[in-house]
Amino acid sequence: MKGFLGNLFGKKQTPPEIPKRNEPVRQNQSQHEADEFYKKGDLIGGEFEVVGNLGKGGFGLVYRARHCETGAEFALKTFRDEFLDDSKARDAFKKEALLWVNLENHPFILAATVVLEISGRLFVAMEYIAPDKQGRVNLADHLAQTAGPLNLGRTLDWAIQFCLGMEHAQAHGILCHRDIKPANILITQNGTLQIGDFGLSRAAETAWRQSHTQNGSLMKGNAEHGFSFGLMQSDGKFRSGTPGYIAPEVYRFEGADVRSDIYSFGLVLWQMITGSKMPPFMVPWRGDMEELLRGIYEQQMTGHAPRMSGPLTLIIDRCLRPDPSERFGSFRELRKTLEPIFEKTTGRKFEKPQIGKQTVDLWHKKGVSFSALKRHREAITCYDRALQIDPQYTFAWTGKGVALDELGQYEKAIECYDKALTIDPRDATTWSNKGAALVDIGRLQEAINCYDKALAIDPQNMRAWSNKAGVLRALNRYAEAIACHEKALAIDPRFVNAWTGKANSLCELGRHKEAVGCYDQALSINPRDAETWTRKGTVLHALGRHEEEIECFNKAIEVDPQFASAWALKGALLDEVGQYEQALDYYNKALALDPRNAIVWNNKGNALCKLGRSEEAIECYDKALTVNQ
Image (cartoon, rainbow, N blue to C red; front, top):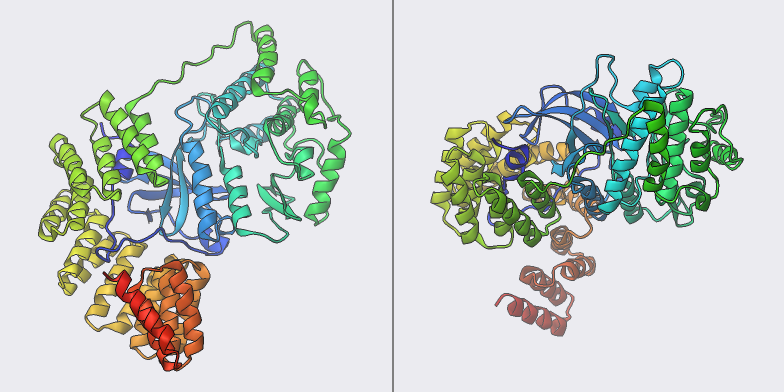
């Protein structure tokens, strides 16, 4: 049976520009635009069809989506732009979020498949938890629909499940959740608890640290519907969490650890045994977030949660001690205290599930995660482990092929693709991947044949259409390339690479105004793609629209200050209009980023000549000749 991970990640997409590869793209839309970005029936990345909207949270929006090939349903969580407004922040976020993906299978942790980047937007693909007959999905729903306390036996059952999930996460490198609350505790239809959003709070804080050096805060929500996860910064110190669930030491900017998580879970336990929809220690909202947090903190420091009775009273009281050293030291210690009460209450022992089996899917999933971090050699090791278990697992062969291709081992990659195709000759994805590897070694006609085979199997494979277009463009068959890009766009009008690829081919045909329109379409989807801003600027130059051209180069530099081409091209424009000194500044910046660019060294030499600085110009020409050898 085909697994989802293979279908989704056994793919490699060739950018429309050959042989140059695109870097990950970025975007910076408002959250309102993010909320409205996908509607029911839309495709996300050509892989998922949107079924509905599962709601907003502190991180962004969650879509319910169906995988187009397998029909399996997933929850796709996408992220607010404020967390990810530069490349370092995005890389930090992905690295932290992938820790959740690598938690392996555990019955009390919501399964996360992988972190995706689609059209400049980050997603985490998660298991979809369907609502029960009462429409309940998480613990917050159960609290909202229950009059009075939850059943004590059920509360203890869920509490022990929660502790076991946290123990597993901590054993696998996630030492602190940072946003424990009822909304992040999922309850399946059969009554099993699953912890969600592992690592995302840490990921958001890490990303925020990367891109924000000034004091400020990021908090969403309101008093009526509750506040969601937020980030706050003061004098270089950070705190994160959801108002009402933040431990006292976190409020004081002292950082979070497992004892902070135990404090937050103590608040959740209090809600379960009292039936409260809100955590204890809440104070009235008067329109000022810092005042609200300070008021909650002052209540917390009294050390006594209100209206509490029953066998969990002393346990919750210990969880909520203001001094972290007086709380439980671990979730294992907390669980060991809960289990005798569970046995006495229910008349049975809690049966811990068996976990830890190393399956082919698990090794494949690890390989995908390493590839996402560009750690391709480690990914290959994981794919090999999967193939030791099942040599016929096609998606491990395909994944290994992609990793080898990324390492420049194209012939070996093709061997892996051929292995996969021997097992399943009707795998359109692998045919497309093989085509991309053939492009890398210049066998373009064979690549077209592979893309044609992929499209004969799956005419809706937009990547194969776009990849084929890239090869046709390399062969100067621009009209055919445009037709292929249009096929891809008919499948998914938000496919950015098809818009940029079509624009590139239109430029080759001298149809610059149409090309500008295509670049605008791409930028409306992903306005943080520096390369597309730069390409649009070069087309505007051809049209003589120099003021708009400068705006495009400025925008490219703004969204990615490390994109050397934008600095170089703006320098060339300044050079062209006689602003030689200013041009030198831009050439120098471009060369600092890309010191082996012979064209920029030559252009800098020309500018120095025009300024009468001949000896310096000769040095630049010599440098150009050296790096061009």
